[in-house]
Length: 400
Image (cartoon, rainbow, N blue to C red):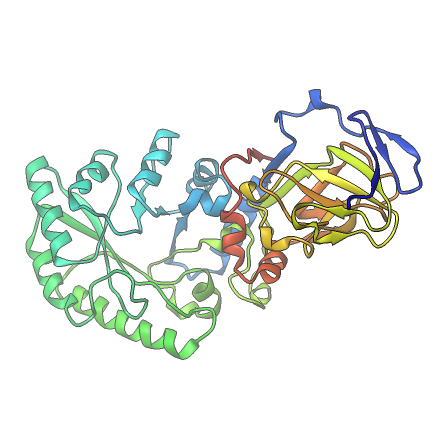
């Protein structure tokens, strides 16, 4: 049976002792109608980019991986910063992502890292000056025919599968493909690359992949082909400096997320995203009161429960029900009950003066406390990449 006693209004806050506090937020000062948003720190992104540049060997270029809207951040704005600070190219997952960047005014090189299917879609890539990944003889033939039809030389990168098992030409068949490429003047192989499967956790397997890749690169250069070889993702460029080659492909590290535990000893990065909301409702409940679906939270004492206008549809994982924490006035407040689609509740009983309008930090810092994407990943059994990518498109991004 529900035992909450008093609910609040939109103009005041209430503490566990019953003292009324004025609202700490004025709606007219916000640029979002629902007070839930993600702050993207462009300065932190730039600092991370420059730090990674400083870690590279002199000849190594950066292909900034901005796929999935820059891992949930804001690809259109961060891509421009990366290019301005010397990125050789940008990496996206699909033709659609590349077109979105072109529509936002991005002019630099854009490499499509994903597989293109059907191959007729290579024409759309060419129309938007996007560089496709080719990973088969079939794809190479299609691109060559398209270039002949368009009477235009088309660039591409060749993918070598050295152990990831996703897409790519096998190292054993690559030499024959290189011979075909060397004979075709209508296409230009700007790059050859592979992707590591275990760069963060298995040095032996990663070294085996690298040896296979070096063999393929040597075969191509023996034929006189000129291109950029690239293999290192964030984990590899920190752990294996000799794997940097002509270019590297940092992704998660650009956004201040750790590619593996202990990576901070190589480079100290700054998180780029903060995920925030505000308290929109407060109520005092008695011991025994239940909160949210399934009545899984039962108040053990007289408590103050705050409602936040954010839920799993916004990317706050439902697995954080009754186990996650949120920062209010610099204090950690436990999630009370199940996270719902659009709202969630937290216990603010121990927060002096908690009021409607108070900022609540889901990811980020407040005072001396901070909640990281890594902490949330550990709580939900996933990786930090997924945490930021999950922040949905209905959460507005604000550049700060």
